[in-house]
Structure formats: C-alpha cells, structure tokens
Image (cartoon, rainbow, N blue to C red; front, side, top):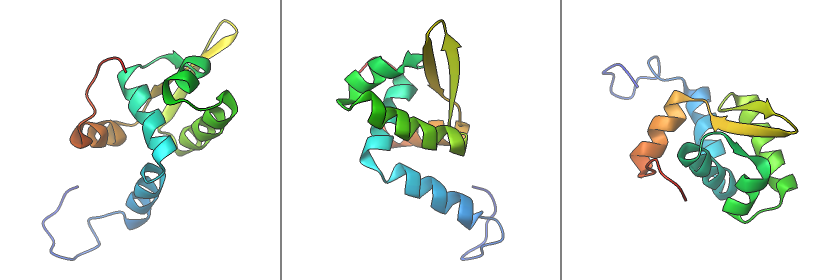
Length: 103
C-alpha cells in the first residue's frame, strides 16, 4: 500500500482489498494457499491429501482462486499442477508467518 493519507481512500483500492480479505477469511482457501505457497507445482490429489479435504472440494476452491488470478495451473500429462501466482498474496502469507518448505 502506498500513499500517506490519513483516512483517505484515494490511495487504497477498497474493492480489491475487500475481495482479498474475503477470500483469505475462508480457512479452507487459506490452508490451500499456504500449501501452494510451500509446495508450488503440487497436483490436486496431493493438495487434497495435504489439507485433508476431498479433491472435489479442493478443485472448487482452486476454481475460485484461479478466477481471481491468485493461482495458475499447468497440465502435466494427465494431471494438473497448481501454483500461487499473486505477489501480494505471496507477501501476505509471508507476513502471516508462512515460510517456504514442505508441510
């Protein structure tokens, strides 16, 4: 965030930040983002195992995150791998204490 205004909204994209915080407020999406942060290129099955959710539930969450532009996917043979693709979310995860490494 830039600018030095006190209470001014002109330097803050309220809609964008509201959407970011709304998406981050869901514990399942947040957990998925943390795993993607730690294990870029993970496939859905491994991601579902890592977060203890079904592949269907994880796929639905990934669809929302891809639509927002936070996550990208790459086909690898018959599988699809996912990675975190948003620098701001990456920095927020660091700020929250999520380091790089395996879960």
